[in-house]
Amino acid sequence: MSLPPAVRSYLLLVRWEFLRRRQLVVMFVLLQVALGVGIVYGFAFLVPQITPTVAVFLATGAMTITLTLLGLVAVPQEVALARVSGRQGYLDALPVPRLAPLLSELTFAVLMQLPGAVATLALAAVRFHLHLQLSPLVLPAAALTALTAAALGCAIAVSLPPNATQQVTQFLSVGLLLFSPVAFPMSRLPAGLQDLHRGLPVAYMADIMRGTITGHYDTSRLLAFGVVMAWCVAGLATCGRAAARRH
Amino acid sequence: MILEAEGVTKRYRRSAAPANDGISLQVEAGEVFGLLGPNGAGKTTLVSQILGVLLPDAGSIRIAGHDVVARPEMARRLCSYQPQATAPVEGLTPREAVDLIGRLRGGRPGDVGRRGEELLGALDLLASADRRVPLSGGMARLVGFCMAAVVPGRVVVLDEPTNDVDPLRRRALWSLVRSLADRGAAVLLVTHNVNESERCVDRLAIVAGGRVLAHGTPSQLKANLGAPLRIDCSLDDPSRPPPLPNIGTGWVATGRRLIGQIQLPEAGDAVSWAKTQLDAGWLVEFSVAPASLEDVYASWVQPDQTQTAGAIG
Image (cartoon, rainbow over all chains, first blue to last red):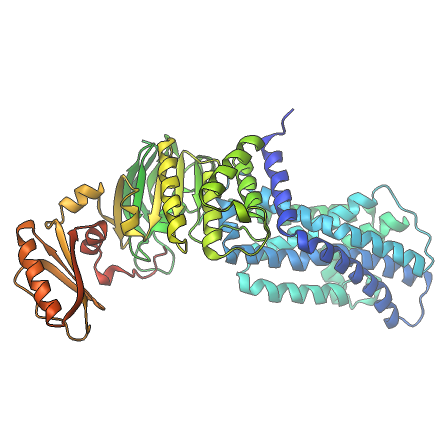
């Protein structure tokens, strides 16, 4: 039985992504693990006393950050580079569905982030003696978080001039690490930032990760998954519109 | 007719002059059609519209009867393409790159493998076919050609395929371009390599300032030149050109070269004049030869047309 042409194109493009970056795959995975370890250990220096609640936030927050940082920082830079180097123009002229190159890029980003996220969680569980209550939804939640971050990263890259993309994504990574209720509770943020985060996806990404790992959601499961999915669809739609646009 | 462009017009924002200003051309199956013109003439803009990547402001483009302005996905299916920039081969071996594009263009793995081997072999690339080293500019361009030719479209668009390619491989490349047409493709060839392309193209158009200035077969265009021969002289000192003779027309001096168009009966006098200048030390060498496509090109494209503000390609 042969695959539908669209699926075949997508799988070939995923293969292309892995082949062209095969030398970097090991480095990507190791960096993601190192990032998770850094957050678990590094953030612990900032907090004088690691209570069980703090430990849960650090462990699940570190996992959320490993799942989002590559999508929000590396994906837009890759998309911007493709636009400048002519790779995007070449892909635009190939007989493949318009979203297929983007989906292959996102697939690569998601797969690169999962091992680091798992390692981070395992390490945090050992470090803080956590008893996790993993839900069967943990894998879909991790994949959705990584996909949403990568889709939003891509949406940023297609909406901005290539040379502005890097500055914006660096700004975002600082905001994500220090000013987002990911590794600490929302209540620690000033009221203004709390309001901002009620509209942004990051707090909900952290919530679905925490919820599927510990069984406790900050908001409701339905709301958290719903908001992340809505941002995911919006990100993909922005990228899809850009891919189909002819100037 | 496989490719028909009619009145294609494209103006970029923030640009005074249109990049394409009512360009019309037709290319048949089995034909190599050359698109010649200076930098900024609008060639790559035209190619991007044929490929369905850029939207024309006016005009129509049909490929194998399909309106590809309305249905750009048909353009992508029906055209294979070698870009002016290097094809994105980084991180891949030449064989992997050719294989991936062949399969993305719908080729069966066995067929793609065989055809890829044939193309890489014809261009003497088999020794480096499985190496993932950074390729030189010329090698990357040859791999880009193989990617366009492994599962060719009904239209094969080649944008400057010979740039940076060494002379022997260039010869092999021209013969592969010809064989693409012989196998039934309509080949649209954008090139600055005017003289070498003369042996390969069936018809051509000279484009400048976004318009087609002349089109026809190489012999038709040369017949319109008005002089079947040219005399090509190398000056000893470019700042001291010799006094021009009363024979020949269209004398042009560029750097050390001085070129004039001459009629057949003038050939003897032209040689005597050049010999005298050679003996007197004004010239280093000279030749009298049949007019070439480069002479046709030079007769149409004036130096002030080599740059058109705002146009791309």
